[in-house]
Amino acid sequence: MAIQPIRLFGDPVLRATAKPVTVFDKELRTLVRDLTETMLDAPGAGLAAPQLGVSLRVFTYHVDGVTGHLINPDLSLSEDEQEGPEGCLSLPGLRYDTKRAYGVVAKGFNMYGDPVTLEGTQLLARCIQHETDHLDGIIFIDRLDREQRKAALKAIRDTDWGGGPAPVVKASPHSTFGAAR
Ligand code: NI
Image (cartoon, rainbow, N blue to C red):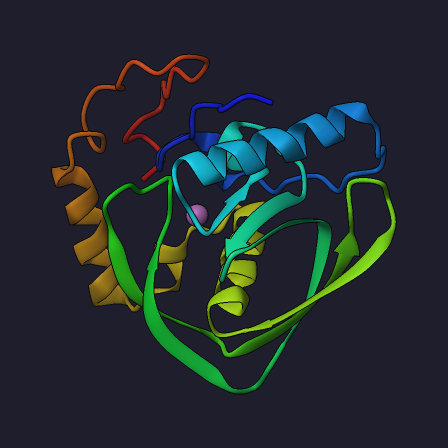
């Protein structure tokens, strides 16, 4: 198990569409363990594989004391919506009210390749939608309205990690920092 550096907004891996997992092997289980360890250490409510630089459809969650993971998620969203604060470990320190479906049924697989269904409302539903978005190259500020999104991008430029020269991070040069906007 190892805590890995988390890729920050501006890293192109966060904008890529992640590939479905086809091989449920030891390497995948190591990835799930790394995601879990890194998420709990941060700490965060969820972490998606692209945030560790791995473009595979895998995420972990830690909501209401329950820790788990889901691979190749396929979501059904409720018609009801919720609005509440949302943040992301790839945009440290920033939180914005974000509209999401109130409930989700997520079908997918565990790290052994067994089919699983994850159902949640409120915070868990928000987390599942946020992490699945990461697998499609979507970051939560993309879900904000135009004005809020502009404010968020400005806030990112004003942080000590955004809009400037790349911070020195092990295993992640962030060479396109700022260029992806
Ligand atoms: Ni995130």
